[in-house]
Image 1 (tube, rainbow, N blue to C red):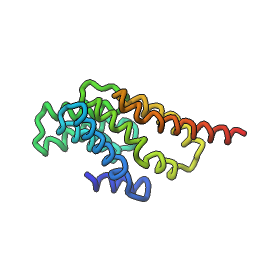
Image 2 (spheres, one colour):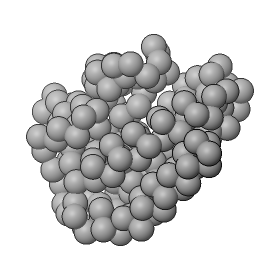
Image 3 (cartoon, rainbow, N blue to C red):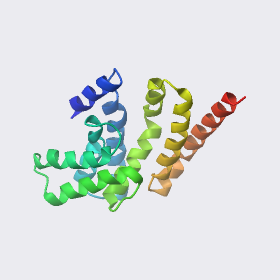
Length: 179
């Protein structure tokens, strides 16, 4: 799987980063959240690793649906039960719009949202942009969306200072740009 992400990274970015920066962070956070809140660890870890696999085949739009479908094929070959595969798919789909139907989905959605704040993902996106004004607009929406997707109040409160710093940084950039 790492090779699939690395190949995709090289194609779109020119360097490998997504697996180590985003996915490994989501997996680590998912395991920590599972220890704290419970849930099926096998389902959570599988969903954490596979929640963005759809990005490797077709880009960003609808990647969660592709990830869910791709995960089914991958997990069948790993002897996951049909029930666990469905639970993985639900957890993956929870990362799209924050609609979780299971504890496992809530955990993976939260870990994914938190990983955006705790990895270099925003810096990589800024580095790759050719229009920093568009990046600033995207960044403002993305940090708010990610913060809203943190599904546990205590985890949200831990990240609130960082979220507020990011909002302030963007506001200062916009003020500077508009003067």
